[in-house]
Image (cartoon, rainbow, N blue to C red; front, side, top):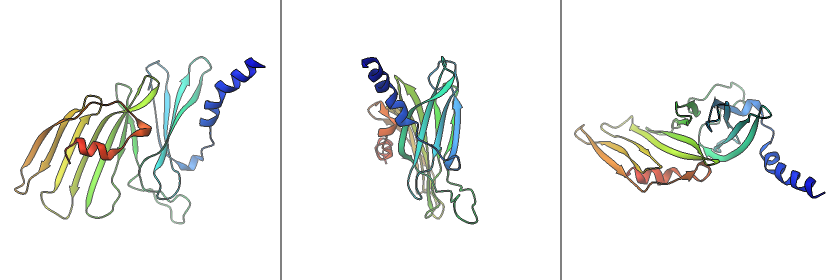
Length: 203
């Protein structure tokens, strides 16, 4: 009986992560070797409810049993426009997140800004798998106001080291560059707060 209870205890976390996913709600996905074991893994961005941020489902391949094992769901961490798949006249949104793999095994999340107002701020996150968790390794953004001249800024920094660069366009059209020097941090993706990142970029 004790061995059975132990087996169930070990199985419960995986069962909790194995929730059904409607295929029509999968916005984008990417495969790659996240944990460096030579086997392809999977990440998917999944819609939740209209206007709500989206979930990210992570799977690591179990090489021994040859299947994709669900290891983490990061809830409502990725913004994007609800694509309206369940409404008449469906059209793909131009503000849906994009995923791609980097050569070092990290995942690049590109988050285009929603078309609200004249200012657009596109963000990019670099997600890495370290010590059994998905963490934010890098943050970047590009911001521009399409109705005003010389209103643009950008930043790109390594969250782990706190080092990077930022730039801001000046009223005369020139660009002022700064060095980002913040405290290096290891932040789990599920705990990420973009507001802190903009502060680090000296916004």
